[in-house]
Amino acid sequence: MLMGVQFIETNDDRIPQPGRREYLAMIGRAIEMFRPPDEEWTVTTHVQPESTVLVFDLALGHEAARWFTHRPGLDDQAQTGLFKTASLFLQKNWIARSHSTRSELKMGSGK
Image (tube, rainbow, N blue to C red; front, side):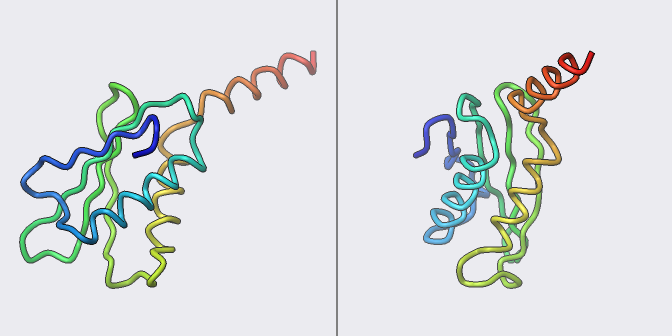
């Protein structure tokens, strides 16, 4: 498990193994690459019976979870689509504290 990322695997509607392990590893990589290392994340997966759509709930700290969906049949073997979707989701839904600090410094230095 990655430091700062907790995977909740006790819910009844979680994605079954062996796929869940691969999906969580890909989500963990996206968090590791696109978020500051000091953030605490919780990731929960869901899938309805007989559904082909996977749901990923991501929560930063104590904030309410936000979710995105993924249809694995449309992805390649390396899960490139899932990685891209997770990465964009992270970038668009949460502004990194480190980036806002840098922006504030740049704005202040121009005066």
